[in-house]
Length: 129
Ligand SMILES: Cc1cc2nc3c(=O)[nH]c(=O)nc-3n(C[C@H](O)[C@H](O)[C@H](O)COP(=O)(O)OP(=O)(O)OC[C@H]3O[C@@H](n4cnc5c(N)ncnc54)[C@H](O)[C@@H]3O)c2cc1C
Image 1 (cartoon, protein in one colour):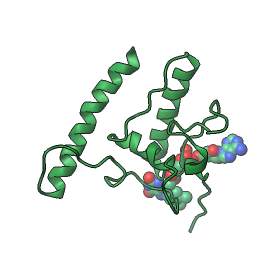
Image 2 (image 1 turned 90 degrees about the horizontal axis):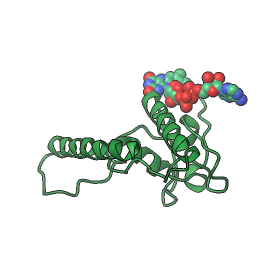
Image 3 (image 1 turned 135 degrees about the horizontal axis):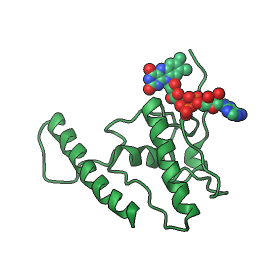
C-alpha cells in the first residue's frame, strides 16, 4: 500500500493544468490525478508546451480529448466527474469513436488510435505557427 496525495483537480484545475483561480500557476504529474509513469511524464510534457506558449504570448492550444495526452487533462479537469480518482490512460477516457459504425472492440480502438495520430499531426503543425 502507498499513499497517493492528489489535488481535487476537477474543482481546481483548467484543462491545461493551470489553477482556475491563479492561471499563471501550473501543476503536473501524479499530484494532478494522472496515474503512472507515462501519464505523469505526458502531463509534464503538456505543461511544458502550454507554459512556453503562455510565456511567448501565444494562444492556448490544449491537446484535444481525442488524443490520449489530451484525454488525461480533460479527465482531471472535468467538473462533472464525481468521486474523482487518479487514472491510468485508457480508451474510456478518450472521446468515443464518432465515425462510421465499426464492429469489434479491437477494430474500434484501432480506429480511435489512428484518429488520434491524425489529429496529432495537425496539432504539431499548429504548434509551429
Ligand atoms: C511502489 C510504487 C510502484 C509503482 N509502480 C508503477 C508502475 O509499475 N508503473 C507505473 O506506471 N507507475 C507506477 N507507480 C506510480 C509512479 O511511480 C508515479 O505515477 C510517478 O512516479 C509519478 O511521477 P511524478 O513525477 O508525478 O511524481 P514523483 O515520481 O513522485 O516525483 C515527484 C518528485 O518531487 C520531489 N519532491 C516532493 N516534494 C518536493 C519539494 N517540496 N521540493 C522539491 N522536490 C519535491 C520528490 O522527491 C520526487 O522526486 C508506482 C508508484 C509506487 C509508489
